[in-house]
Image 1 (cartoon, rainbow, N blue to C red):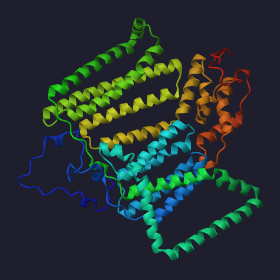
Image 2: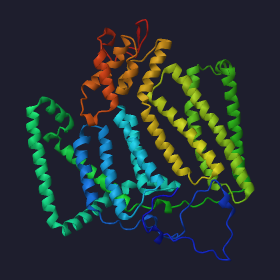
Image 3: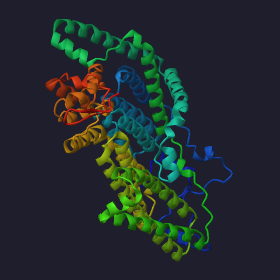
Image 4: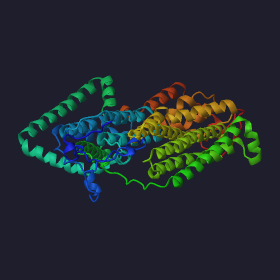
Length: 545
């Protein structure tokens, strides 16, 4: 899939010269499915990387770009001071406009992957609008920034995707200087137009303020509506609002400058590893495959009725057996990806027999690793059954599932070609973060613990104080007094966290509706909300203090 290129980029990236009769024959490596497209060899190796990735000087900032940047700064100052919610989407819209105006001025055209990254980034910003939990919101915002940066850079190689995801940082300073020059050019050539524009804007603001105040004083319903829609700005918040305004300006300028002149990270390439003799790389991998196979055989024996025998020999409980193994299997999955990367770097693939051997050995390793992933997930399930689900446990489980997906993508790349693999892995990471946030992990944690309570009669009410408003619908299903014990801390947080509509998530709105309908009952066992670890069905309390 082609990336986004500026108009006329072919001038500094010349196409292939006409074939001659003496041109060398294509290498067998062109048939290698693991090969990824590298940069064109149009610069000497002595050229510094900064010169290699540098784009053409950006076109001057247009008036539309500068107005969009100003709107972003104003929205940041007015909306982001009270928290995150729908306001992030509003800020993202004006930033997108600034970038699109700059890209159009530079002659850049959006390509399919540009739309994919841009729409994916906007979708990720729906997480803070829907969910109250801070940790999936943080992951979604970071992933949205990375997707936006990739949309502006259009990278396709491993280095391009990795560096392009943080490429906006390069324009934080350059964008300010670029805007200063554009603003100076605009002012120098349009003295007669700025005066009327400023006067018109001032008159409009005065009319809105005067008549808005009059209508608000004349009708209480209109006053309530106006109060809910208009941000509450106080003098005490002045420094904080100014800082948000400057941050919004800098961020929008960075996006616009990148859209006008992105760094060409795809021009960088790692040096190819020196091909090793066949036995030097194949033998260790074959031994590793055998080790994986033996481990999986033991796991299958345990899975089909061997738990009692294994646990009697080790002296471990089911929960201890699960807890002992999951983290090691997670590390094994991560190290396997590293082994695959190193093998692809050093394994010779010029000869068809070498390519066949690489496919067979690494394909077997990928298949065995998928079974290890399933074993790790099985152990985590045993662990959760014994001790309950927590944020950490659901997070590492989601990560293990994503690593399994990456291994599947690598296997597919080995069969059909790997040119698409870097962007597919990055897109799968963004999709995983989006799915994780929309699934509401806090709600899943609460739901699983409620189910465990119904099955075992054990529940840790103290842990629920850490959860967000997303957990309220599940915790509301508990009988009293456990319901009030579990919801007491969340209800107190919601009561002291009244925000404007644009900074309130749908999870908070839903939680407030539930608490308003049923309320929280006062129970002696909940008098010290942080003093009890577990409350059992018979009313006994364990783990006080």
